[in-house]
Length: 591
Image (cartoon, rainbow, N blue to C red; front, top):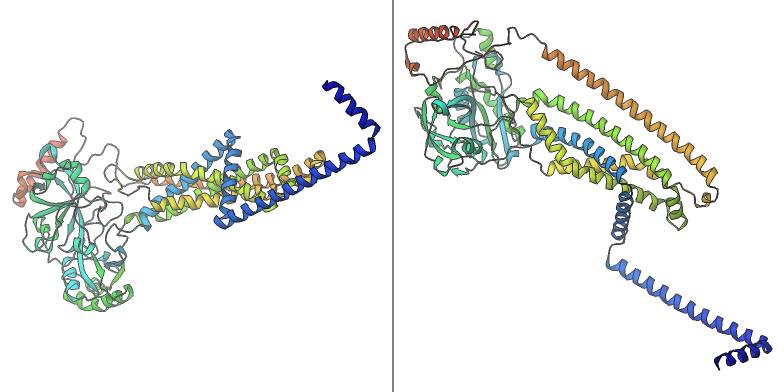
């Protein structure tokens, strides 16, 4: 039945064709108008949603997030390229960050004390020509410190400190330690609060104090006493003299000398136990540090100290010296210099070398940037069709450049994350290389905000450097050239090859500089290693005796004992010769 109705309908439509076509056209027009109306309504709704979204949110953030997601997908599609790029950047950025970390620890970082920028160091402009010296940081004598402390008005207090090396303990537990002489007000001037117990106070530092109290560092407390709470109040034998441990300094405070940590701190008055005459005017063994009074500037304090210098020097005038040396002593001038970064021999020894190394590692990073730029240019050739399609769909040149730069910054970000452990390990390895077992370097190389900020800054600059050229080249794609693929490819490849050749030439030039610099470093190292020492160092051993019961023997008996010990050592099988001396060669001491 349905088939019959269908044939009757077809027969009627054939006989009335004109009318049917008009009805069909009217029906289609009606559908198209309804579809257009629906499209306009949908477009209006979409536009309204977009407008409301722009008002509620931040459009550029959404665009950035979309580009980041797209860039991540693009990089995941090329895992080999992404791995090589991130690894190269991690090594390049990490080595630069390691050198910066050392420069920061040696030259830039302040002492971990309260308001370190207010600390000043007081020193003369050239005391190296006078008298005896004990300690590598010796800048003043005890009488000079006393006179300056009583006369000056610029500082809230003027404290003194020095350094020395002792043995602590007895028998098998004895060990060498780095000690600090500290005046009674040093810890108060620095604002150091103890981790356990108390610090040395003014009442502990007075003439004739004898074997009194000592403060130990956190590391020594952990290594020698095992971090036991019972360490406070215990007796510590320092060079055969008993001292009572009254406190432990916080872990961050390792002393005032950068690169050298202390173990025990003793009052300056205790130096008399080791034969130091506190009134001796030519014994330079102290460094002076103070804190500016409110309202005083560094220049004002320095001018004030220079004005006090003639009177202070006249009151402590040397005796028994030649007229020229006495005149030179009277012409000294004390001044104030910034003391917030402490004192450091490392700054003079390694400061220039570290800066030079930072420049060389920066060149190494430039070579890495050149390599990555070349890889991105080659990779851009494989992505031309993708970029052409994006341009044909309406992507502007600015959007294409932005997308390519975001991909480069993603690579740099990945390299920066891996550069943090590379920098930490490399800096520690350099410190171990520069130090010696007898004199290890003690630097705080924990990763902090400075290291992270440096790595982030270098990573951003690196991403811009190696990503800028490929991004600009990628933005020159022309959609209409997609039709003429062969001719287009010939033209673009010629330009790209030109850029790549330029990058290769740049890399060769920088590599040549690095090779020449490395050879120069190796030659310098060989020259330093072959400098004649003035004595035969091969097979030479230094032996130090301590904790001897014969310490208080008369002078003639001491000489006999010294001769006897030397003969006993020389009689040991395998010993060719033996001798005695007040100082070990090249140990830094002088007399």
